[in-house]
Image 1 (tube, rainbow, N blue to C red):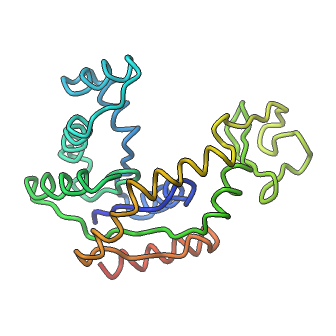
Image 2 (cartoon, rainbow, N blue to C red):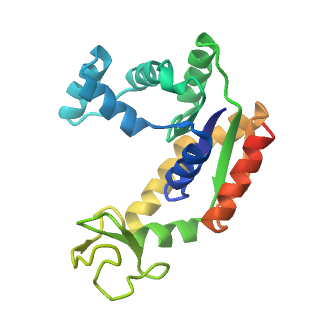
Image 3 (cartoon, helix red, strand yellow):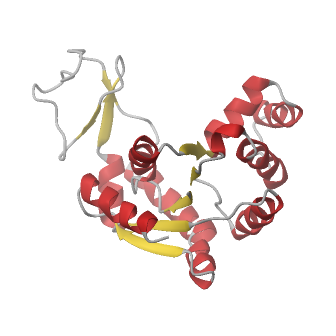
Length: 216
């Protein structure tokens, strides 16, 4: 089973990918993780990416696609994978089609997690975490039982990412609609797209995605 998860930042793609990998034994692949793995492994492509990243530049599609191709050919992807955060553009989607065909693979489904923009802004701008153990909290949806104290480890070092603010989230959403949302039409035309309600509780979203996989 090979799956792509689509949706704006904060839609819960990473969370759902973790649930699916645990249940089905698939490999979760994100662009960031694949880049870091390639750099750490010291592959030729990884070294190319590392040089660009160290200079502050954006890794071009050509290199990203080579890294994805290299990762998908690994033995642990033989039983299936979940792509989280790739492809991001139409060019990347077309390149993914080509490399999967070259490897004798195909996408079984593309699950679009649909979430209201206002909810996304609130969801991301209101979140913070424990600096010691990484436990997540939210200003309204998931407050610590004791204000300012981590439920998990008791630390009082609760921090908020600098880019988790309403203005930054709006800019990220704008980039998503400009660059990534065209993929919805692309995969719809290929009869791969299936939409799920990202506004539902996490467990229900997981059930919806499982139904997509069961029918693909």
